[in-house]
Length: 163
Ligand code: S3P
Image 1 (cartoon, rainbow, N blue to C red):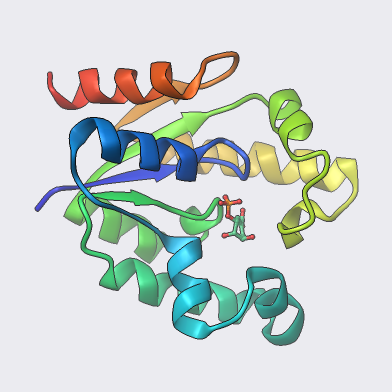
Image 2 (image 1 turned 45 degrees about the vertical axis):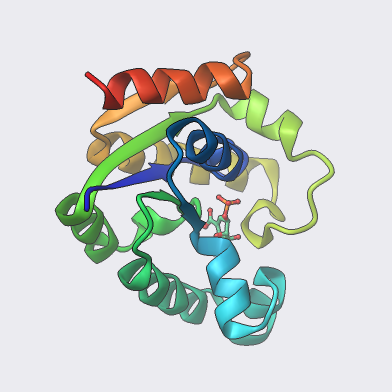
């Protein structure tokens, strides 16, 4: 089975698009963040505050190795470990949902559930810039999501998959 992995920064819409894609394509999807919370029975903010980011990344890699659904929404930091990238490359295709920093900032302005968004504007921007290069470096295709609705983005992905 070839897995379609959605990668991108926090707030780029990976989970929402995975769900829509799953309806359009009639195939199941998984969300690594959701699987982590269910498997380890803890919220992501709690894992970060009680166990630290390193442990969260271990959990994330374990889950990534186990998911076997045709569509997988990943967490924004999945690219932080090169082994995760190798695994995704080996098992399928990587779709980068690109969203501008200003749109992300707007979407996440009331968000309380993303520990790595809870930092200064300067640090958020630095993380965005660093990650952008990582997503671009591993992606098989880049889909721009700014000012597009969910259906348009999901349809663009479908068109690319059906090519
Ligand atoms: C993270 C992104 C989050 C979640 C965790 C860490 C990151 O997922 O995995 O808070 O490192 O960018 P989303 O991209 O779904 O917000």
